[in-house]
Amino acid sequence: MRNVSVIIVVVLLMLVSSARASTLEDVQKKGVVRCGVSTGLPGFSSPDAKGNWTGLDVDICRAVAAAVLGDKNKVKFVPLTAKERFTALQTGQIDILARNTAWTLTSDTSLALKFVGVNFYDGQGFMVTKKFGAKSAGGLNGAAICIQADVATKQNLAAWFKAKKMTYKPVVFDTFGQAAKGFAAGRCDVLTGGRSRLYSLRLTLANPDDAVVLPEMISKEPLGPVVRQGDDGWFNIVRWSLFATIDAEELGVTSKNVDEMKKSADPAVRRLLGEEGIKGKGLGLADTWAYRIIKQVGNYGEIYARNVGRDSPLKIARGLNALWDRGGIQYAPPMR
Image (cartoon, one colour):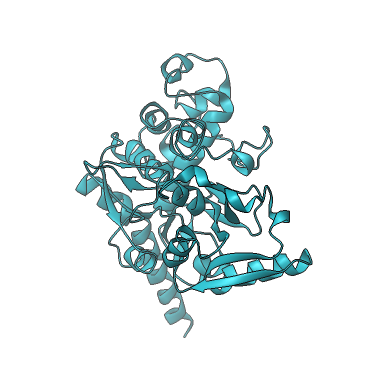
């Protein structure tokens, strides 16, 4: 009986070992990273008129392609609805899911998936019409609020208003898209949902200047890329591709100065750029894997600014997404 148990353990270890290598080998063989994205969310993942994808989530996939294949453009973007996204990853249709997906206990433990980190700290918030006049969430007492018939969204809203001893009039819709149309049609004063979605939606209104996203968040919704469980090698590659962009910003390494920074005497910079230390060995990649990410895609600050920050139409303040030593909580382990 003991021998049978040993055999079972050995077989399981062999299967896990095989799974660990499979995604990287498959990506290298096909020469492309298959990335699941939204069907169109400005600032995060959306195509232009020519079919070119841009966004904060898009750039995570481009970073992985740069690290693994040496070319940020070797990505196949697969648009997915919220209903399709997890199945597409579970069944191997995609290699990475980067689709404004919140890291929760259920999604991290019950779906055979694994979150690699956070590329955007989000939360449920409010968008109001300017004519309503609210400057902060404290001014929403008695407001008519368009809301999606989602349990978590409704519970967050009810709990927050109860804690503030305020009232509201819910205008409930089956989907967020329907709630957004209700807001645009004037059926409510306020729309509630993830602030990332609210900022993107605001740009699609007939007159974006007639609405404003309030600064408060009433829930925690950490968004980040996801991979399948059981493939630790691929998990590490995607995780450290994200971390490389964050560490690069902290160390002052940008897409513009990265070649000059290779001459730096700072050990942390030299480790990041593959000039010394573990280099690419631990990930099974070329020593220049992080250099290629920064050179081709940029550091986290550059990625944030052009997609959702100061250089984008959304102009979302860094807030929690600022680095840990600059007023935010964005943080990556050191490369050593």
